[in-house]
Length: 168
Figure 1 (spheres, rainbow, N blue to C red):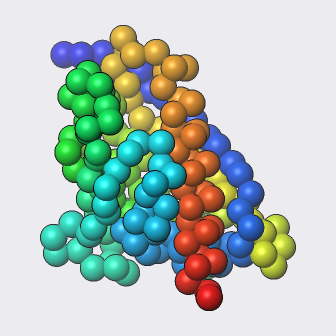
Figure 2 (figure 1 turned 90 degrees about the vertical axis):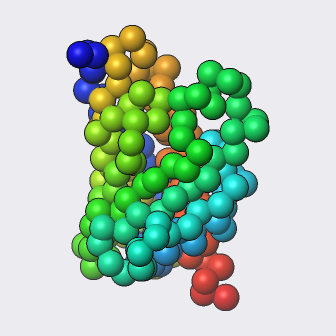
Figure 3 (figure 1 turned 180 degrees about the vertical axis):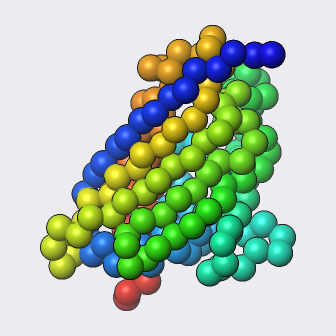
């Protein structure tokens, strides 16, 4: 049986939208990814709801298609063609959501992330991603975390920009 290390990380950044608007953008679980898909560090081509899923229900799974043509053979082998992510729960009034990555991409398992959105003003909020997951012991966590932080930064800004576009 493989041995795993438990990894926790957290990343915060400000977004130039209200906390309510950021949460509204995040609720469009598949749609917001398509809006900023070109800015994601993991190159993807589309995001759709899993069969039978409907916005507003929980759990809510999206399937993000990975563009493996830009990856090395080793990187491509570590990822599924479709990357499922499930919004487990969202409380817009409390400005929080919980989601998980399904499967074992990169050998990682048991990934859960909790997002908290703190209002800072009428058009500013602070978004914090706190996550925990298990990695095989042979994968150095310190080398793995910067990619997550880059992804979290892109998602915070991308959801804010998506929310702004919805208000136009």
